[in-house]
Length: 400
Ligand code: NAD
Image (cartoon, rainbow, N blue to C red; front, side, top):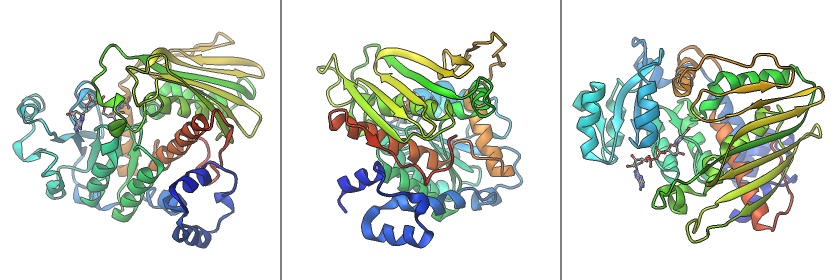
C-alpha cells in the first residue's frame, strides 16, 4: 500500500477498525496499512497506572517536569503555571540557546545539572528529578523529542498538534507503549472547567439534542511573517494545525460524537505572505445522529467561539479557547460561570494525577492521532476540490 492509499484508507469507510480483531489488526499492519492499526493495543498500554518513571521517583511529592524548548509558550504560560501546580514542578530545562540557561536557572532556581541542550538531551535518562518531559518545540520536532524522551524512560507531554502527520503520531504512541510510559497531548482545554461544562450539557442533554455546532478558532497574524508557523517544513501546515485542532476538538466535545464525514475549503487572500501554509480553512462535518458541524480556522482572521444549537435552546462559549477567563452563555439565562485558574496548571496537574493515582488521561496520545486523521481528511478534501471525505473513527475511544 502506498502512502496515499494509506491516507485514503484512514478517511474512507473501507476499513472499519471496530470490525477488525486483534489478529486482523496485526496482519493488516504487516500488509502495510501501517501504524494506525496499532492503536488498540497502544490505548490499553498507556492507561496502566504504574510505570518505570513513577517508580524511580516514588518518594517525591511533586513530579518533576522538564520543559523542552523555551519559546513563548514555555516562557509565558507553562513555567509560570508550574509555580501554581500541586502535583508537579519545574525540574529541568532543555534549550538550544545558551543565553537562556542562566536566565532560567536564576528565575526558577535550577541547578546546572538539570539544564540540557538538544545534543546532550538523551542523558536526561540519568536525571531522577525528571519524571515527565514536556515537548514544546516547533511541530516537526515533536516526534523526534517525544520518542527520545520515551526511550529515556520519561512520561511524555507533547504539545499540539501532536506531530505533522498520522505516521508520526503513531510512532510517538508506539514509543511510549514500548517504554511503558504515559503520553498526553497539550490540549489544555480538556482540563478547563467551561469545556467540561460543555461536555456535561451535551451528555445530560440539558438543552436536548445538539443539532448544530459551530466552532471558530483563529487569529490574525500581527505582522510576524518570519516565523516557523508559516514554514511548512517546521509546522506541517498552517492555521489548521495551529488553532484548527481546537476547532476539531470543539465540534467533537460539543456534540459528544465522532464525525462521519468532512467537506473542506481553503481561502487565501495573501498568497505572497502565506506561501506554503494555509491561511483560512472552513470545514463542515456530519455526525452519526444527524447533527452538523462547522469550523473556521485562520492565521488572517479572528475567531474564538463555540456555539451549539439544540432541540430546546443553545449554549455558547465566547471566548472559547484563549488562555482565559473563558466566558459562557446559555439560552435559559442561567449562570455559566467558573472561577479562573491557569489552564496549563490544571492540565499538567491532571496528567500528573493520571500518573500518580491512575485518574483518567484527559488528552491521551490516541486523541492527538484522531485529530490528525481528521486534519489529513480536511487537507485531502481541499486537495480534491472540496470533495466530501468519509471518516471512519470507529477504532478510537468515544467522543471526548
Ligand atoms: P516559539 O516560536 O515561541 O518557540 C519555539 C521554541 O523552539 C524556541 O525556544 C526556539 O528556540 C525552539 N526551536 C528549536 N529549533 C527551532 C527551529 N528550527 N525553528 C524555530 N524554533 C526552534 O513557539 P511556541 O509558541 O512556544 O510553540 C511551541 C509549541 O507549542 C508548538 O508546537 C505550538 O503549537 C505549541 N503551542 C501550544 C499552545 C497551547 O495553547 N497548547 C500555545 C502556544 C504554542
